[in-house]
Image (cartoon, rainbow over all chains, first blue to last red):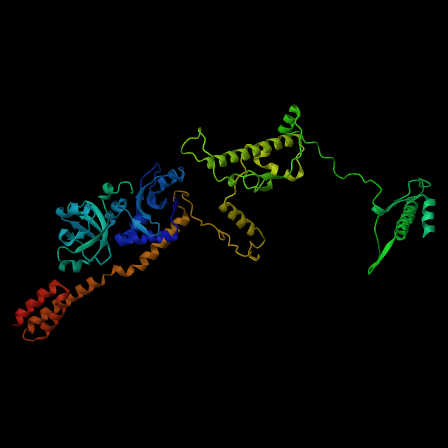
Length: 188
Length: 337
């Protein structure tokens, strides 16, 4: 377990910024944890362990230092991982954090929820609602109509272009969905 | 010259020309109480006398003329000098020697060359290309006891190998006994640190390639300049870790996050936000709103000048940008008609 260095921090923040925009400040600086025995709330920080990035409260970090690196499986909330090529990918565990701070959202009709959870992209026909001002390649969090976060991805079309699309066109390229908890149980 | 020799004989010098040496066995220092300076003086005088005697003797030898001067052949040395090293210890007898002694077996000399019937010529008794060599046998006769499926040639090879191995084992066993009695010959004393002779438990560690490289890297940087100005050997690679290893911030410090880490996080965050600050202003939205407002104003005015064609043109141009404009445009169109 170690803190991210400057390059890694930039990568992680860039990726998060794509999804949460200015709310990143909220995630990084303002979010307070009431974990642990301390009376005053601590902050959250990012820690790297075996190529995976975790969003951990400070009190947990202090306690996790007792465990040696090889034996430490996980701590806090995993938000992503560094690939072998050195790129940063957000993983599905980060969904709650993203959903709470999301800038761009897409709501799915109940009929197309299953398709999305099997790992397909979001089609125009399945979109129930969509927030304004989405640009191409913005990070989008996908919700069900009952406001349950289902996953996240990249916008394939801007909001304006969406209006004119045919119903089979792709609106959101999938990055991760909660179906992965079943499909890729070993890899998570 | 003959006078000189006679002189020396009178003074009873003994000369050993083989060792280029002369000494006077009957000489005594006159007074042991005399001062140190006198003793030194006398010793020098006697030394000079003996050296003169050696030189005289040398020149009395029969000589041959050479370009560099006369050359003489020295006679055999007559004085026995004491041995520098102690005598080697006697080796303990090997197992075979003990056995042979018990049984009364004597070593007989055998000829080195033996007549080989396989190839019909003379061959050495032992070693390479020896008599009765396995590889000279083209065919082995089958016996009734032979098992089918077994290669008799391979079996012979195996037998020979086992004999060689056994002999090597015996040799090492005997060397061990010798090492115990401390009579190990000097030429194998260094090799004796290896496992088979001294019988130490741990195997000598085999040094791997990586380990060697590490050691070489350490050695190459172990100079005052860190190896910077050293001449490289041909084909020498640069050391693996020239620079420092990466240093990371501490995993936990104080309340959990150290001041340096906080600073780094804030720096990266501020960079990111300032880079994206222009996104606070959504240009497209702003343009849309501006257009709508303008259109509203114009439509108000358009009510007064309803007969003019200008607003109609404008509305057509801007109509694809937003739905609201389209509605307005169509309404204005209706009005103009």
